[in-house]
Image (cartoon, rainbow, N blue to C red; front, side, top):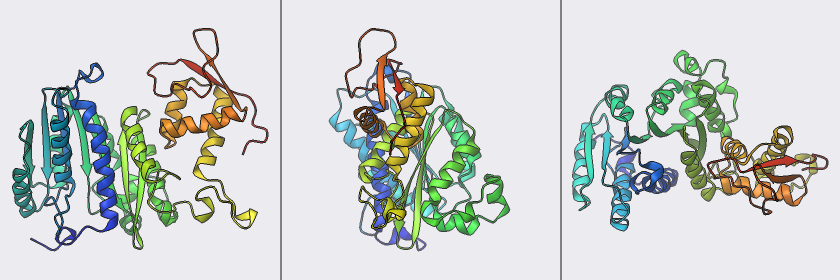
Length: 377
């Protein structure tokens, strides 16, 4: 087997990346495997790990394929009475055939006694395996989760992400290195992916935030949500970008990220610099810059004053700005307590209970009205 990071212990950055994937998977699996009228349409669950590797590192720490198996196994054992009687198909691909052979043995050694999972192994170039598996993703009744943990930067284009997001109920999580972005940013093929974008000039610490915006703009899917999480590993920065067309998907991913980073929900380091970290002011007032939460508060208030939006509109606004419902609700409570906003029912008399904003309800219940921006910080 050729030398690779699989032949040594995973570093802390890789462990953070895998922990994010595990936590999201733990949120994702019950949505589609639990009996519920909301997902009665789902008759098959597909999980694709298309740069899978051998399954673990030198010390036996599980990589993404074994994490997938572990989480499904755990769900099935704890929720037998709630679980749907549907097929779960796991697709593993790696160009290195020796990795797949090792992974097969690891999977077999950890098989769940429920035996509801079906495994499919591939040793195909990435572009070809996507075309091969696309009909599976597009099949009616399919819920898809794709992990694209590439080692380069050229495989994942906005065009490809758009194609995957259009393939039924699909969530996509992909991984890109900042150094690789910088290295290939001047190549014509890379520039063609992001026409009009000057990635080379972007500050290194926030390059995944910028690249996420590039994917969002270039994909041209009005109902799609994108969110990044950056991971510093020594002098390099790696980033996860999550993409979905489903509110529940982005809500769950953002919750995972905010659990790991309570300041921005975006990184395992101080992504906006020391003066923008936490609530402590800088020594010199001219060095103070707004935190992400302060910027969101200002933009949310401006949005409310301009549009008097419903609860559903505000919820979507927060998701697009990288704020899950609990963070958005916390900001709304601040604005309400400061007298900046008020709420009113749409279709009945009386006033909504203070601090209740119905963000995750599936219908419009209240309108949120702005009062004034004077003195807002």
